[in-house]
Length: 160
Image (tube, rainbow, N blue to C red; front, side, top):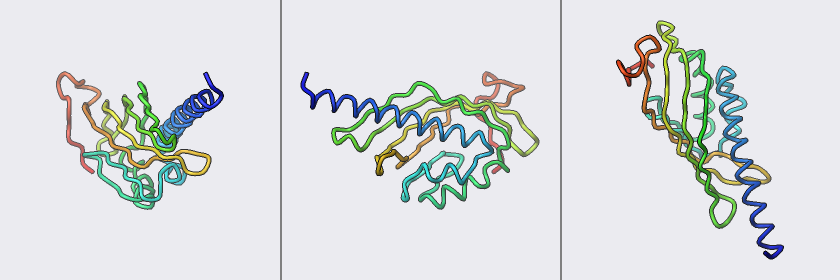
């Protein structure tokens, strides 16, 4: 193996680890009352956050505004984000990721306890020495009342 090959492999592994850290920070900041001031800088200026039924927001400022109100809708959430599949492109400066989400949470209307599950499909790019989200797409597969469980009600509608 040449020194160039080794350097390329190390750069790829470092990118994968940096993207894992980016996603972990996103989850931690969401669990910190959806701290918009910490979440927004994780996104590229023209990024898209698409939560499906949760809404679609284009641009860092729109994402910041969405998250600045998110804790009034969902005052409690614990994001368990697992099963990362991260692929770095040939340039080494762009990547895609797939993740699974399992999230106990509370919806503010009626203080309804919910189980949320789904998947993330993300796109990332290197900016300077770090990585940012270009797109975050969430596919909700389950939003079930805690009491009833997902066998009785796999997807419920919650007021915005």
